[in-house]
Length: 251
Image (cartoon, rainbow, N blue to C red; front, side, top):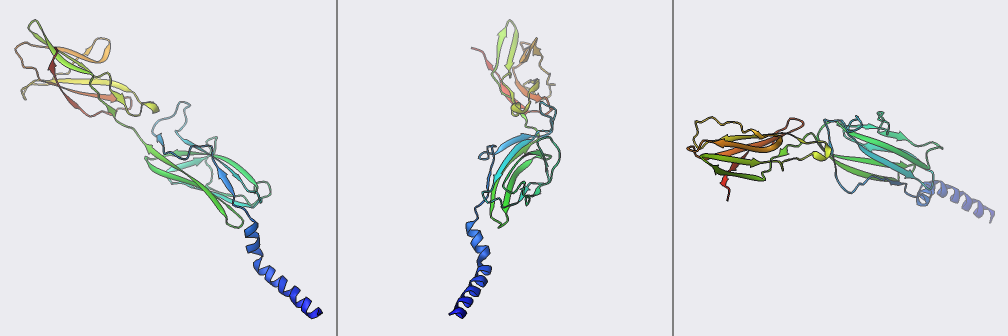
């Protein structure tokens, strides 16, 4: 009887040693990682300019990690080499952290800044693992661009006859910069009047005094009305497409 007891005890110790990892794996829970950033949409960032506070444009990614079993092992940030990873103070940081310490293996909070250096589409993924390699992750997609061209928009374009002169009126004040939410704006409005014959030089049209974006000019009465070429330039020097404006007689 005693021999059977000792054999059973020895068998239990041996099998327990073989199955302890599986046993603790079953007891272990997956770490939890969350972020207050909106991860559901693709955010856009414009590079090449500083923001209002004089710093590089960046996306802020705060992460909070908890583990009920206090088994946190590591945190890694998978980020492109074209994105600089910094802390919330702008200091460059590593993209891997060893969390296997008594002060950090139960809860961790970090805030990262993602500073792009080139335009492109990016996916940044944060992954946390515990000592049993159970993992949690979250991802953020970013679209990074340099400068978007402005758009030239025509509000009015007509001519009318005043005495013996054709009076031409063109309004492109509704033009806009496509990246105005990132500080873009229209800096210049341009228009050229083209005569109906090819070999006549195309003169620039003057702005209406004090009203950029409205052009008025008078053409000699014996000349045929032609068409207007208009475009706009943004505050970073980018030109819109040059558009052709065919003039109509004002009713």
